[in-house]
Image 1 (cartoon, helix red, strand yellow):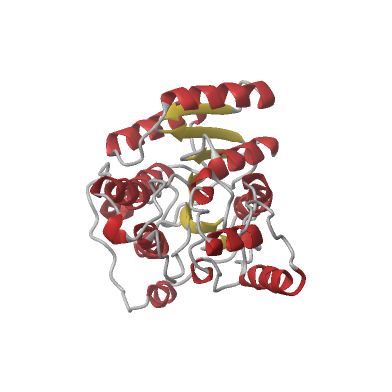
Image 2 (tube, rainbow, N blue to C red):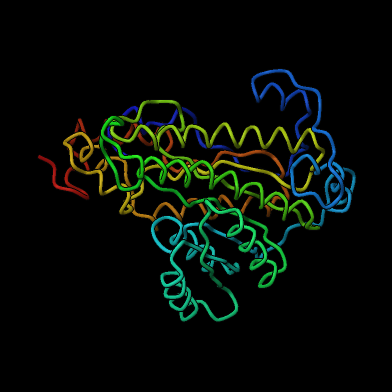
Amino acid sequence: MAASVAAHLPLRAPARVGAALPRPSVSAVARFRGRPEGRGLPAAPRGGRGLAGVRAEAVSGGGGGARREPMVPPYNVLITGSTKGIGYALARKFLGAGDNVIICSRSAEKVESVVAELKREYGEQHVWGTACDVRDGKDVKALVDFAREKLKHIDIWINNAGSNAYTYKPLVETSDEALMEIITTNTLGLMICCREAINMMRNQPRGGHIFNLDGAGSDGRPTPRFAAYGATKRSVVHLTKSLQAELQMNEVNNVMVHNLSPGMVTTDLLMSGATTKQAKFFINILAEPPDVVADYLVPNIREIPSNQSMKPTYIRFLTGLKAYTRIFSRLAFGARRNKYVTED
């Protein structure tokens, strides 16, 4: 998104992906959440799907004191919203690295077309796809069943599906339909996917890693013209932190939830907002094509299971240093002017 520079300049340096580290203590996680907390959730009966049942199932699923099987490539990867844009670019990069990938989107026709294309390039036994509306719990449960059928387990689950309803206007002019599309996809859909991914991975001997994509607004800065989208992306960071704390409190040691920040990507969603002078200015300075972003993100994602790390990470493509350097270069030398869109 590109309504203001404040909506896009990251606040932190990229997370360092290093060797495996011990899991943080409960007190450390509590401080990470911003308030003290020393109690776990009550255990649910074995077989229950709620996170409250994690403690009861942790031992059989690799959590608690059970020994987790090491993760070794090729990895089994599931990416939501992966028939176009950054999701599609990530899928191609994982396949190029030799991994197995499941793609999905709401359109069965689009999934079928993209899977056929990727199978021709990467082989029949490396990519599969199915239609899934992340806003529908039954659909996401069916996605998990599909993943188990095709790959037995998922090592890396990337929650990429998101929407701005292709709407760039003040909130007071935004329709009910657009608000429902944005909020149910970006917030409800993300929660459902996290729930089902955790329930799947906690019972896998290798465990698993979940990556939630952030977006403009995730750092708390304003996003005028797409306030609802920014609000949902701000909630992504909070949800990830809360899930990290819940997993820790419930002694689930084989699943970790991370944040993934692609920065500004020249997708249809972003480019549909290139209607103001300011938007065009920052798109030209800060945005990159999906394949460029994927070239950076995928090796950093794969490094986490390769190092057997269960440390929470926040992988960022567009760092603060990179953003401010580009802005300076533009102001001083006119760099990247009209790179993607013609400026007034």
